[in-house]
Amino acid sequence: MKKGLIQATDWYERLVHWTLALSCLFLCLTGLAMMFHSLNSIANLMGGLTVTKYLHNFTGLLFGLALLLAIKMWWHEAGVFSMPEDLEWIKVAGGYLWHVDAVPEVGKYNPGQKMFFLAVAIFGLVMVITGLIMWFPLMFPSWFVRWLFTFHALGFVVISAFFFVHLYLGTIGSPGSAPAMFTGWVTRAWLKKQHPKWLKEMEEEGTLVVSGEEKKAH
Ligand code: HEM
Image (cartoon, rainbow, N blue to C red; front, side, top):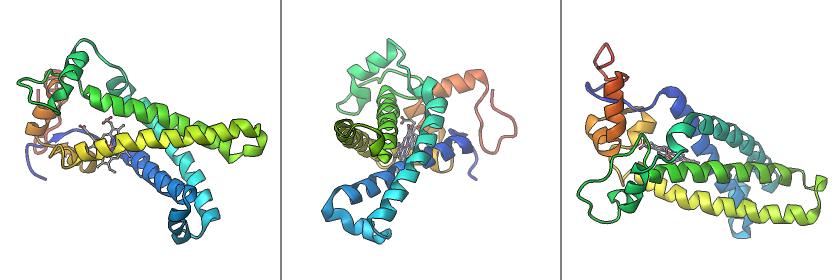
């Protein structure tokens, strides 16, 4: 491995992220395949609508597990806004939409990432709870289950809207980000640009792990 790279994520964080991400994408695909007649051909590729329904339901359980682990893991860093710096960042949209001379420094995750995390956490739970009830529709009044279909679809719209922004900013929109979730190792320049406060904190606390260096840098 190249020397001087900094470890941004460990194997556990990446395992939880990719279990959550891939199960979420598979649920979107199978959900769409069941919902729209025009997309039934996707269900046919998976062995028909009944098989797709089972795959969707059981993947939902995996998504639910990954979601609980993700909430436990990221809650403190991505689930709580810290004022006033997060508000200052929001006022200039993090420098993403217009030119800003100095983007306010925020903690490990910026407010945009926190909003994505919260959308996934809140609407992900909505998807899991509504999905579980819809799995056993005869146990509940039919008017209630019908409403849940609406909320399930709403959760899909919210998560997928945020997902496209996340996908763009996690790859081409912010070069150097993707390795954080693929290999776990990022450049110091990327950390300095994307997470300057986090870099400073790791340097001060002596928790920085640098490739090619035996000890943690202090
Ligand atoms: C499939 C394409 C995806 C790619 C390339 C990707 C990439 C990334 C990257 C690079 C990070 C770290 C960002 C940083 O530290 O600045 C990250 C964080 C994160 N990802 Fe993904 N991701 C993908 C899909 C998903 C999906 C589908 C979900 C949720 C259902 C998700 C949820 C998260 C969460 C909650 C974080 C923590 C920080 C945040 O809120 O941005 N990701 N992802």
